[in-house]
Amino acid sequence: MRTMPKITQVTGVKFCKSCSTTKSIEDFYIRRRGTDLRHSTCKECDKKRVKENHDPKRYREQHLKRQYGIDHKEYDKILKQQNGCCSVCGTDKPGGKHQNKYFHVDHNHETGVVRGLLCSHCNTALGLFNEDVAIMKKAMVYLTTWEKHENAV
Image (cartoon, rainbow, N blue to C red; front, side, top):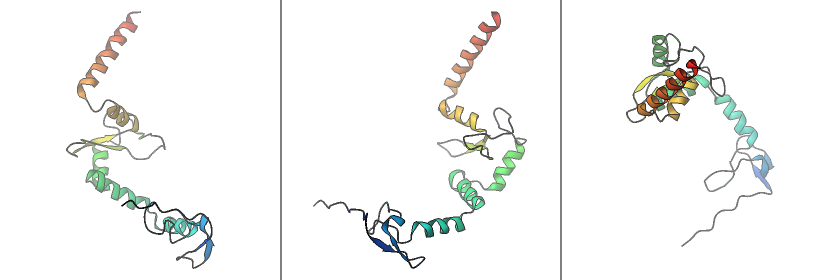
């Protein structure tokens, strides 16, 4: 037996459980799943709750622990061992799309072992080469060949 998909309410009003006011249905976010299809709190109250509970340091700590099994102290220890620089190119600027202040944690995707900290460019390069040493060696030979050729001209 096939069930009909629920239709999201697009007109009318809804009561916000947080601020105890009745507002337009458009003032409530649409749920991705669930029975009501609209959040029980209005957008304004949701934004306020998120702002009050947002703690970048706590989020960073949780991310490091969940993704790599390390905490910020271990991260800082690795960074100190690398003299505050990228493990590959030696830059002291992590870089990246958002000018992130943190280096990427490089790790083996199969074993999860943390290898070091990389700047955004080096981390991206390794990823684009699928961390395949053979391909990287071929790229080195390619560049070396052209370097010799260009120097001869």
